[in-house]
Amino acid sequence: HVQLVESGGGSVQAGGTLRLSCAASGQSYSRYDDWCMAWFRQAPGKERDGVAAIDNDGSTTYADSEKGRFTISLDVAKNTVYLQMNSLKPEDTAVYYCAGGSIYCNADRSLLPSNYNYWGRGTQVTVS
Image (cartoon, rainbow, N blue to C red; front, side, top):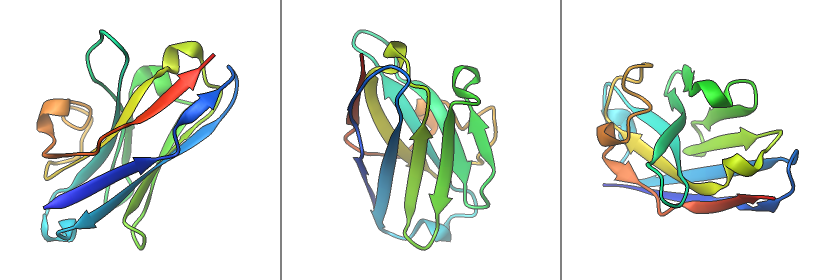
């Protein structure tokens, strides 16, 4: 069983930056032929939307609205996924969730929450 713990959320002004971290522990996910880590976000009253995803080889997928502002990265040695968020906007305000799943990490699948087995508890990001 994989445990995911997010950190790095907080309150910032519009135009600011934040870096979220997601530390994975527990069962090694390297046993899976396909493995994908992703960030999702959910604002009050809205659905959970995919933000960015990355596989163990470092290939990435981004939602169109985040391209150029957000960067997902993976530190394999630390079992940690990061989401660097720049030029933050008030509409980025949401709870951000880290997810992991034994799926082929392509653009069609990696930003759909139903494809993921493991979830963190989320970290709040507020942009004013």
